[in-house]
Image (tube, rainbow, N blue to C red):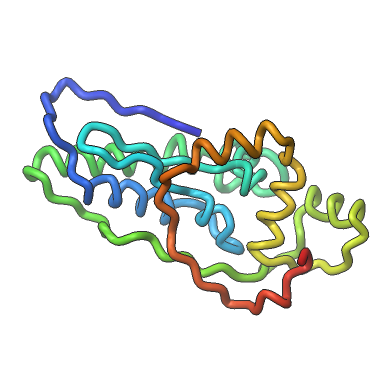
Length: 184
């Protein structure tokens, strides 16, 4: 998912910190269960004239369902198109009016990955049944693996490699041991 912001102001330079601030806003406003969705948000370009935040549906297949309000969880509808875009525009306006100040952190986002607090979602259960994998509680790594299984064509994998080349990724720490994953 992408969005663009244009302005009539003659901005010659958008700071590196502004790009990191936008990224922190996007990560901070994303729904959080296991941390997989937040981990899938990257800063792909952070130049003086271009900021590119990328939501990687290859690693979080449920991203579009949450954004569109489809399925059992409706409360996150428009979390990107409404909440995140609005917050980034507010940050840009503040940046322009304050002469280059930002309100959010310019550090690389840090995300804690964990196990689900609820059970696996219906599409995840279907994948687990098909692969003969037992268990109901899954980790962020399991969720990413199932997204890749579902979208994992060779052309899609190549496309993701190209898009992600040079992207900045969030720092992660896990609240679980890797041996606790359902998919190994």
